[in-house]
Image (cartoon, rainbow over all chains, first blue to last red; front, side, top):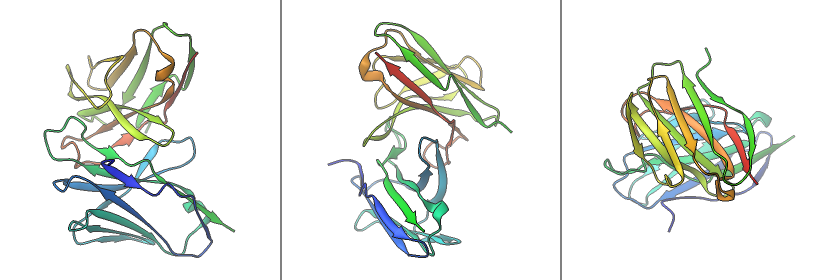
Length: 112
Length: 114
């Protein structure tokens, strides 16, 4: 089982739709969680951190479920500019040489 | 504000050739990283550094060497390039607190080994 697993998609949604992605992680001792966004052939950029109590940033909401070992990203009122690949990122327990572990990404296309 | 700058942006090598990828950051970050990204596999950590003069192996270090002689620079070397090293290479930097601090990425180096 991969340490971090994401549905690769693609998710094709119309403008204005609400879309949600899940990401599961295998190590229950993982400590920090992030969502990064990567545009085609560009570098990853931090979208938001994921806090235990859940957090919201405008149209984006991130949630963490430690019991089931998954994090989620909800995008409301999708814009064309939201089209990108969304990377789930997990910090394994300290002492691991791998540091942050990146999922392979979920591709989102928002259609006009 | 340049952030993280990688050079070169593109390179084609023949098997067995050597080359060095340069990463420079102007954010005074202590930590720097080299990743490779292959289709369907996500980013994988090659080597990282927690400060000037120190380096450590990541998940996929074989075939690569690194040096951090200056705080702002992190070099990735391929001594004898192999086709399996064809990939997109990203450098990143962050404040201390690896795993808890967001990483800032350069815009990548696309490397093809023939």
